[in-house]
Each structure stands twice: as structure tokens, then as C-alpha cells.
Image (cartoon, rainbow, N blue to C red; front, side, top):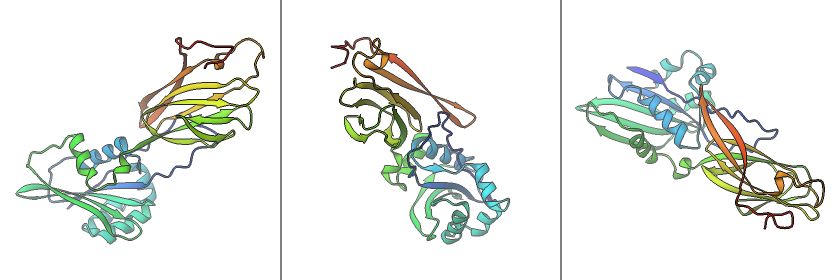
Length: 274
């Protein structure tokens, strides 16, 4: 038997903020287990890529998995022979909530199995077995469908983080039309991709308004500076601005750049946008 550990490199946010929003993502590791079959080459790696790009799961990187577990990882998974409690113990040592065990075997057709195994209890939360042609090569969309049959639907909702910093305490902050409290506020974890209008206001100050486009796994920092009416010349932050987040993937990291651009169609009325 042959076993390959396949786990995704975690996205690294290149725009850090001083206080990150709480990260409630469930952590998983993907392990590939083969029973005398060479079909579906790199299927574990491909499943990992789908999880990393289409879900909000925190997927342990391959190097991290081996550092946490040690060189015996492959041999120990082989020794488990697919037994859920044994795999669960490996998940505990890897410090992940679940193990997604991807199995490949051949009984005439190629049999692809996927199991969600709870690390703490060693119980199988969900499983599927799919018969495929010997030369099958499932697409990314097809793999996503398979995974959607064993993972909760909410896992496929992805998120980004908006960090709003206000120069005045006690200002009312609204994101996407929803009040988020008064400044200072914690970083906000929001569904992505999406566009969010931001409004920050306080009696005696001119209102700050902006709009941000946030991509999955992006981390955007918005500096909302409030000024009093008549304080110097009209600043850029008295108008509507649009923040566009551009994601660039380099060596497994996500680099987020925020660009502010004036909405030329906005017309100030008495120094403020209405």
C-alpha cells in the first residue's frame, strides 16, 4: 500500500493589522490512502487545493504537517489501514479538528472514497464512495461537488477581514448598512467576495464614507479620519472613495493591496456627501 500526505499551504495575508478578528475556521488535514492503485494521480493534492480555494476551512500545510507529526506520518497512516479511530489519533497529533481521508482503490472501476473523521472522537462524520472509470480525471468542479456531499454547506462560504481604524473614539461605524458599534471596534470578519459600503460618523464631525471590494482571505485596513467642518481645506475623506483589493498569489501567499480612488460621480453638498 502507498500513502501520500496532501495538505494545502495556508494563505498568508501580506497586509497585517494590529488586532486580527477572531478566526473561527475549522482546521483540517487531507490524507491520501491508496490500496494498490495508481489511478487518480495526485488526487489528495487536488482535493486539498479545492478545500483551500473554495472553502473557509483552515487547511494545514504539508511542511507544517510533517513538522508537527514527524517523519513517521506516511507509515502511521498506512498502519491505520483506513480505520477511523486510528486516523483520528493522527489528527489529534496534527492538532486539527478533522481529517479528510481520501482513498483510492480498484474493483474493476476506480473507487474514490472521501471520509470526514473527527480527530477527538475518531468517528466518521460523513463519507462517500464514487465509482469512476479507470482513466477518470475529475475536474475541480466535480471534486467540489463530491466534497459538498460530505462537508457542511457553510464551509463553502469564504471570508475576508476589514480592519477599520478611526482617529476619534465614540464614532458610530456602519458596514454594509449594519451598525457595528462605536470606535474603536474589533476587526470584522465578513463573507467574501463582496462589496461593503462603510460609514463612520460622530456629532460635530464630517462623515467618512468609503466602499471596499474584499476578496476571499483578503485583509483590508481602512483608516477613517474624521475632521470638523471648516477644519482646513476639504480633504479627500469628505468624499466617497472606493477601495479595491487586488490579490496576487506568490509562493503560496496572498498579497493584498488597497487602492483608493475617488468616485467622480459623487457631488459634495455643504462639504459632505448626502
